[in-house]
Image 1 (tube, one colour):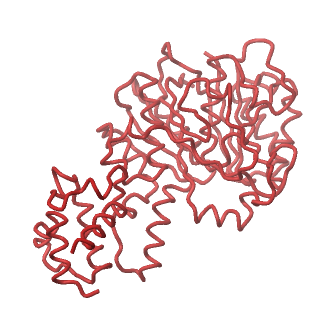
Image 2: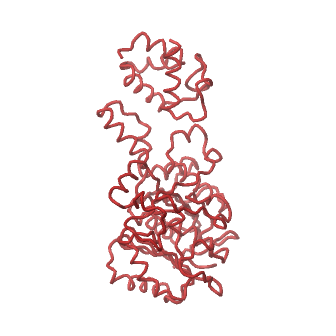
Image 3: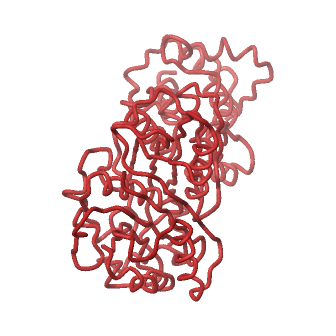
Length: 85
Length: 355
């Protein structure tokens, strides 16, 4: 789980071009959206594609996203439980 | 024709053009066939949240336009007009690479949104909250000239409106490789490059962004008067002198009235003959070139307008620009002509006058 969290942090930094942020700057329970990391709706689309592409998870209900993408902790938990690759 | 003054300039290029008097000690390129911009501190102009999604062309356009607006001392322009030959190539490449690499699946929105040609014009308007006329011209080698002509007409026809006009193009890795392959860019093994004395096929490629605030009113900051712009897509060598003489005549000038001519020589053996042909016509003028310092791109004439404006306001010519023997005009520099063509097509003339 720890490895997956680090992997997610790296992927988020790279795919969302968070130039001035390092893995150490993101705490597992920090909010990803709004206050916290400050991601927005376009970033949410990037994360949805990332779940599908890298972990084989298709989000069918957009409302799920709000809970899943709350933090690295919630994302990692959801991926662990649902990944197909 | 009404007066149209250039009252503010912002330029990002392969030189430190965001600094004052940057050509006193220019960056000299002899081993590079691709000249990338010298990056300003983008975060001084764009919020960190916005800058992370922007390609270099968008960032350079926003910085150059902000510099021009600050230089002119205005808050928001009455129109935003941009010209770009290739648009936002970096995001176009990113989007197309994703399309190919992932078998048309898993496409993300950011690079697609940012890949359109009018991204810079749109982002500048968003930043300024400016809902005025906004237009982007994509006309290959006369994209900037098209924007400039529109700007000139907007100033002439709309009272009290100032206009922001700019030219932007960016380098992108895959496109640069293709340009080398088809010899639009000089080969890697030809270095050192000398575009005047060692002509071969292709040019030194470049990128950049230059923006101008045009206004009917002269201010204490006015650089010069934008007197006229003319361009034609196809022109035989035999028609070149007529094209130039007709343009000058329409501005009540003859060739000997031109004090400084700024040529677009890029070292391409196939097309630099156009400049050679015109040189004798301007025997009395200081003959300048600039693409050895800035590179060739479809809107590189925007850099020439920036240089010409600086020359007219300062009444001095940086030594690095002289193509002929260094011979500074003896009297006042009154008329400065810019002639450019892109691979034998898209010939343009821009006339700047001292104020």
